[in-house]
Length: 154
Figure (tube, rainbow, N blue to C red):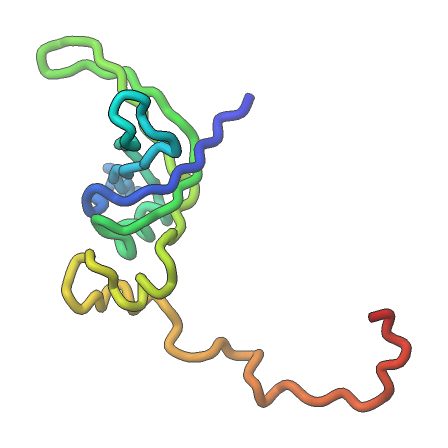
């Protein structure tokens, strides 16, 4: 059996981080996902609002680096839950349990902060990118090769 969901959309609100009684992190948020096709009646694209739940490290990552309006890509599985409301009625809801959540905005919009975010300076977002080149592959470690390249097949 296969239960795999891949979604890309904008967060409709900031992720809500909570902890279970044993301390496991759980984050809930929803994505606004635009359909690829337009409605025959109105000619406009429709949007689905999909509930997402993330656990443990994924939950902490999402709550730290994602915010309302930001584009995100989510992979996970569909889960259907049966529950009883306050009036005793049987209810059913669908949500995606996220295995991975990725940044889906362009790098430029992340660095510039875009037109959305938790603050005007977007300092919480800028802290997630390295300030300098990664170590181990700096320009000073490259050297010109000596010898004839005549034996290379290209």
